[in-house]
Image 1 (cartoon, helix red, strand yellow):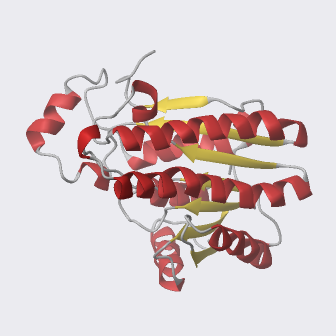
Image 2: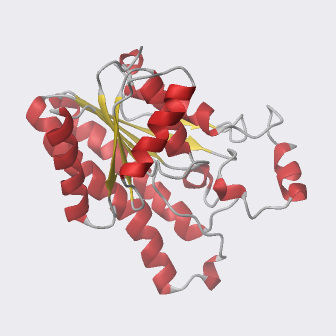
Image 3: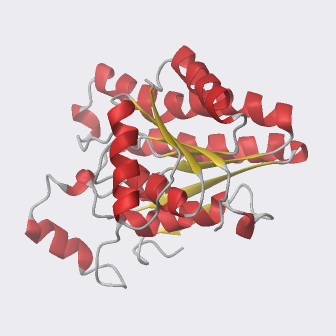
Length: 256
């Protein structure tokens, strides 16, 4: 098991169709102790994941749910404190929490822009700052931040310019963390997924999806578990000499 005994916060993991949920489950299958951080997290969130793991043949998983609004720094501090109080330490943060909106630039209101930045960029900053305090104290730790293809190409298939801007900020933030905290034994990397079978494509027609798939070299959409697999690689010692990297998980849609 690649994460046996590791304590992992997975932010944005309460939604069943999401990358965060798939990551929490895959990490638990590899022996991790899981902290599900989400605005809607509660004890039932943890109980549901434990039951799913037991039904799949992975009994004894240790999972807790912590309600956390990542736009609030105090919530993120409490999250880290709760994780350490329960499990004694903290090893990994995977930040998959986020929102998306596809308005054109001229139609984006100031409030919409502020909300996008608050959740996708400031939220990432708040989470990273909170876990880094614990990582620095113990001399190691891993951060995996989910950005987007939109951050690489300037706008995405489902996200507008404010979404792309926020996710581009996540890329720069993560690289800055990798550079500053590498000497302290801390790694930080980015995953840029695209066109996975999550709630982000729920509003698209089948014709729109088919048109996109025709441009993907692998000729299909990705799955949340496939993105979770990249998270697992970056969280584990398999990537022990990888930091500041951006890993594309897009089926070849953006080869650059």
